[in-house]
Length: 258
Ligand code: FPP
Image 1 (cartoon, rainbow, N blue to C red):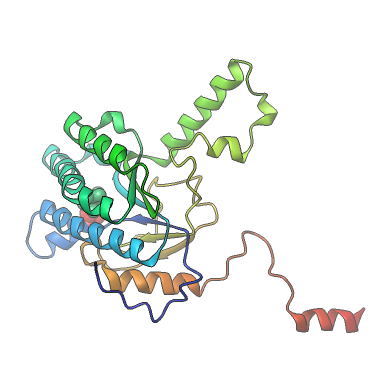
Image 2 (cartoon, rainbow, N blue to C red):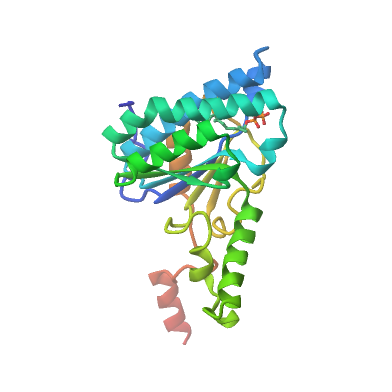
């Protein structure tokens, strides 16, 4: 298990669900005169570290944007390398996941994955299904708009079958048709490598999520950077569109003015 310095954190106020856009593998490699694929390989080590750190902190949900629907348009060689890394990651980590009671779920259009990757993923999902300490959502061939369209289609089918009235569509039954059904919305989104974009990641789920963007490239995002992101999150004031309850002195002032 990795060493974590948590002295800057309030361990009673950690997020329940952290989502990560792992960006900057290509830039990390190119700056070193290496191929983009080398960057992805190094990025895989960051994945391992962040999964272990999340487990160690006791955060119950982690989502990793590993491959977007748009990533299929990258050169074949790079797509193949990413698929092979995913397969090798699942194979090499499964025993450690079992030991650490980590559950793997896939979020996205898994049917588009090559059969060898799909098989490895299905094995990991099946073997880890009863693990209860941490759920890792691997977002593969995932697009936020596609996720919403699939949910709309599923609800439309229920309406057409007469099972659901159009006015009965609400946030709860819509959420239940998304790839993240049963998983709470993220409290914190981390994006590495400085881009201020959602890039078609979770569109519905990020409605009230705190966003943390760091210039650090994903292959260099390790324990220290993760703890810094969590400490920053703990300094935020989450209002969910409401105003904060008036402080006792405000209440006193209001009483005096009344
Ligand atoms: C973005 O970097 C990253 C990806 C497209 C894929 C993320 C994949 C990994 C971290 C490796 C394997 C994953 C797992 C789950 C084992 P980029 O290529 O867009 O970087 P750039 O913006 O600098 O070009």
